[in-house]
Image 1 (tube, rainbow, N blue to C red):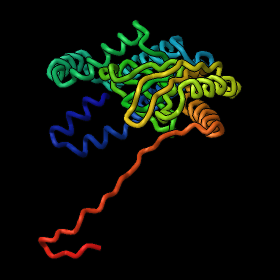
Image 2: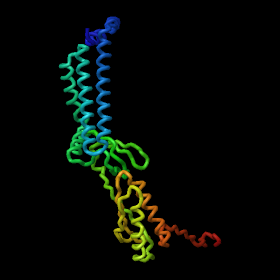
Image 3: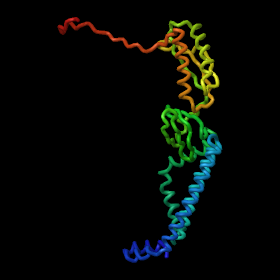
Image 4: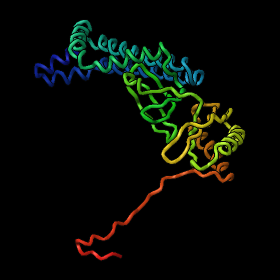
Length: 285
């Protein structure tokens, strides 16, 4: 006795007959066994996924491993659904034809989904980025935590927030290097030679910070509205430490500039008071 018989009884309005057929233990045993097998298989795949993540915690191998595991999960679920339908007496060939028609009908409605998959394959083959890389997305610096053929999961370095980016928007994701360029604004009145001397002397102190490989003074970098720009380049051991190490480097530079009496300009707000409007007979203060 299959579930198709039960469906037929329900359609014909024979609720009592359908209820009696639902009491057949064989139907529920088949469902429970099928679900149990699915759960066990998915748990095994999950366990393999954890081991793969421990072994390939970053890089292209981790990215490929995630895509393969996600594909296997999808395949297992499809096989489970087809097998369960066979056990319950549902005409799989008829259902398959119906599903094919549905796929054609909704094809236009899933264009974005298809774009995500195509771009996901493109990312994978052309190595745009890998799991573990530090990237910039919409002004947010973060680490690629997970990659699938449809989306990329990014964890923000600043607060640990998670962002899921559709792969069709990959052009908004920029892979960051382990190099930081720090632009410093110095007052125009300061002598260039003195500023260069102080900033060069600060570089070894920046290099001494844990996690920083080297620091180099690059020189004058143009004028700004309230001063001159100077550039210091910092090379990190790990790009994912960009935010705390940038703050550490800035702290060293700030201390060096202040100890040597070099002025760091800031925005000045000028408030003026208009003269009293005599035409309105408003007395001056």
